[in-house]
Image (cartoon, rainbow, N blue to C red; front, side, top):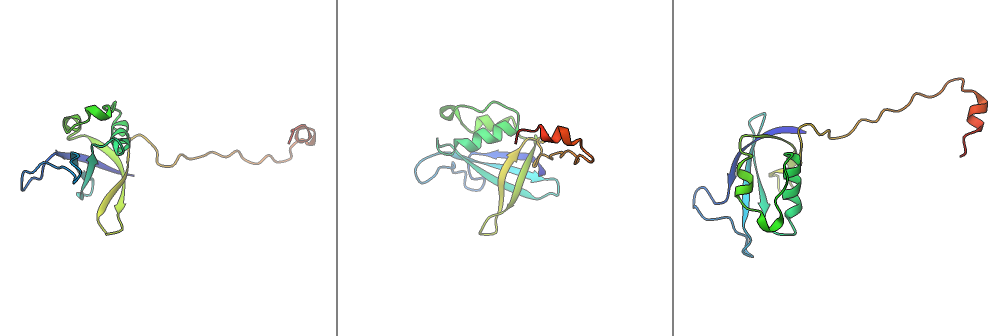
Amino acid sequence: MNKATIIGVYSSDRETGEEYVTKNGNPYIKLGLEKEDGTKIYDAFFFTEKAHWKVESFFKSMNALPPKFKDTSYKNFLDFKGKAIGIEDGTDAKGYAKIYKYLALDEPIEPKMDRAAPIENADQDLLEDVPF
């Protein structure tokens, strides 16, 4: 897990000023993040019912209640600017930086399992009573 800071929430292209809208007319935003090593990553959130799981996952990792699908907008993300978040990131098949998962900073990636030490010189009577 890497720690990143949310550096921007963008609903339009910064150069052209055009609103972010898919070919099908669905709005989306880009979230700008900066990792601790200074690397910047941008991730898109599409405001469609099918893609709402990602909005829910992001809000959960920020310990915030996600908006309902119909209420989701650019404004829902503005309060997170400057906040830290955990991310699992890497590169996609084309070699571009990609965020695979958002995590709460206190959420472990892989829980460690403690295994009991083997019983040495166990009483045979105890072992015979085990019903398996």
